Length: 302
Ligand code: NAP
Image (cartoon, rainbow, N blue to C red; front, side, top):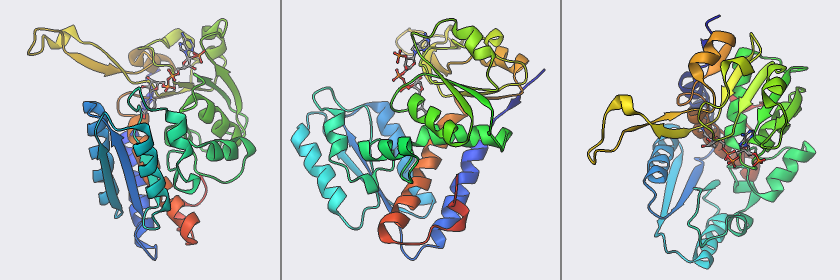
């Protein structure tokens, strides 16, 4: 079998188109603030890309860039000010933060109604309780990709490998919300390969390059690869400093998975683009909830 590629770029573009159409129907313009502390080059690239896509979707983008030595109290004061600002609908704190700043204490300062990453305790609690709230973007992206292949997930056996707060746990709860039968695996899971082979849908969120091999996958399964791992790529030759160049790979061995699965989302090019698209979607949902606007029908459900 040669699997279909689940093209996250195409599906994310369609989510962004829906968001842009929805924005046109709103009585005002939503605004997303992205807060970046420090000078991590990868984070700067992400933030610039988020800002560009926010503007392309017809929303206002506010970038707050703070130096790496920003005190924790100063960052909290900034988050509180954005939380109070009636013109701001969504706030995203780019993670990871510098080591001297506690992530939990910063997130606690964020108004849950503006928590477009769905990471505050209030929104995590709502997810567990099955109440409406802002859901974390990457796991929502995983569900949308899985539903692009199988619109009704009811009764599907789903394995989520990884139980992080950011990805694994919320992904498991979101698939449960879709009436899937969910198994959550982690570093202490015994005989992971056999557990994986029982799954109709396999979601890998581990952070270990190409850990999931072809013989872990049930023939005809849907595979969603969340992992993004930078590995040496000697085939690309040396960089300017004579070191081997690098490339990104997922948690799934893509070529082997394609021999067995029905459909595979690649990494890069799968879940990654969905994360920003879902962030834009969350910003509109946050604006509607806080300002009392009707949710445009394009963004209802899901
Ligand atoms: P994380 O916080 O490091 O969590 C990794 C999880 O994998 C943990 O639950 C860990 O189990 C489990 N694990 C580690 N080794 C394992 C093994 N050998 N067998 C089974 N489970 C194992 O990572 P994360 O934040 O969830 O991210 C996971 C991956 O997704 C990373 O590659 C990250 O870069 C990527 N990611 C991508 C996006 C995107 O937008 N594309 C967004 C977020 C993350 P324990 O709990 O037992 O330690």
